Amino acid sequence: MRGVLAAALCGVVTAGGIVAPVGAQSPPNVLLIYADDLGYGDLGSYGHPTLNTPNLDRLAAEGIRFTDYYSPSPLCSPSRASLLTGRVHYRTGVETWIPPETDVQLGPAEITLATLLKGAGYQTAMTGKWHLNGGLDIEAHAQPDDHGFDHWLALHGWPVPHNRNPRNFFRNGEALGEIAGYTGQIVVDEAITWLGRRDEEQPFFLYVPLVEPHSTIANPDQYNAMYSEYTRGEPDPFENGLPAPPDNVDARGPGEYWANITYMDHQIGRLLAELDRLGVADETFVFFASDNGAVTTDWRRWWEVNIYGSTGGFRGRKHDLYEGGIRVPAIARWPGRVAPGSVTDAPVVGYDLLPTIAAIVGVGVPTDRRIDGEDLTALLRGEDWQRERPIYWEFDDDQGFHYALRDGDWKMLADRALQRVELYDLATSRFEVFDVAAQEPERTGQMVDTIRRMAAEVEADPISR
Image (cartoon, rainbow, N blue to C red):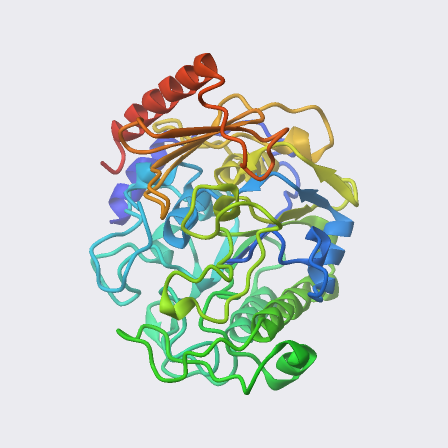
């Protein structure tokens, strides 16, 4: 497995970025935080009227807030595969979420952001949700250390039984059994401990994919108390992974969900405070985003009950290629480089992170494969920036669509046969209400042709297919 990875790295070349490569001058640290199922409207800084999210709101005030940031997929595993590789997830073979014990993985031939940065002299660690193989105990599958992480604490897809006292974490390949506490606290505790033990002479890359606010919700009592007026009855989480609904699946209102987001925000605040305490906040590029859109009150699966996510009014939700399934909150902070309190409506996507961070630290991206993402450093500096290629999605969603494409303000959704298509001008139909495919035949034909061409390119990708 490592031999394949070493061979793949032969295709990586050094390229100029906005700072010099490692060895010439100190490059920035990188902290990448990924929330799980957080909706576009689930933060105070994104307009939620009730939720208390002071730490993420402060992060937005200190950096740049993206209003048109997209997750690479409306579902978790493919979004993470794309985030870490800079590639459309269908290229990697991770087409949808990965159930436990299935023979799907982010294969060893893929090159991740952690592998790139480790090769550039970075210390690397991840703490949180992996969900990029069939299980953290499957020796035949690539694990986080096979993808560049020196140290890792991870669970597969969700905590068992739920967020309180989980029993399915692994640390560097070793099963840990039950851990007292809540997942967000456990994940951030590990991240803080690792930061304290790292070599202060080397830069670090820390990836923190949190479990919150994915179902099943379980919170410390003081957080539930903050929103008790929005909750009916006593919080009673059921166990994740059950084959059938248990007796305690009752709709109790949004209080527990909102409490979970405030709890997540508190844990992120602890992590950011640790950067301050260590004196490295000004030397650290921080990026926060969600892996896909929210589960809303449109519950489609029994285990989604009591998830009350907000899409900010966008159509659809998790599992959909409509905006509600893929447009999510994203914030970047880089003191001295990113103007505090800035906002951008440029359309960007999660697979832009790999080439952007590579440019920031001064390391080249792989040249032996298609990297779909684009370098956002000019955008971060507040300069004019335009995408070179449309944003492309491929996923079998709950609405019968398989493809989506955003090109400028135009958004198309299409089925596998490219026969059922919908076209929206997001400048005039932000919430995808007015389908103008019939009124725009020339543009519709051009975008269908673009989807057909990009789909063929993805299908022919030589790395994982």
